[in-house]
Length: 101
Image (cartoon, rainbow, N blue to C red; front, side, top):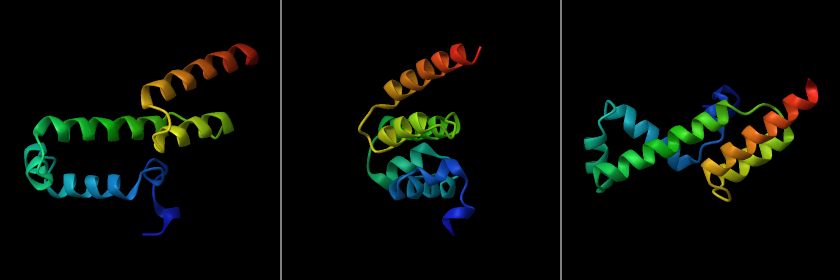
């Protein structure tokens, strides 16, 4: 699959994340089955899935703004935790919206 055919939310994911999503779909969304495949506990798989959901939401909520893109890239590369990235983007949007008003 060519990169330009992928939805934007997928292009920011690491190969390991995409493999996890594929396994999740093939397991019909069964976290219990995923835990067995990975040899980990259910809560570990749930945490991984929650983290992926956060990454996807962060991608969907960002605009083509260079500042937001930088924050997103830092979060995706785990240089910045997702909660902090979300706060920075939110505060930036508040300031930007005040300036535009």
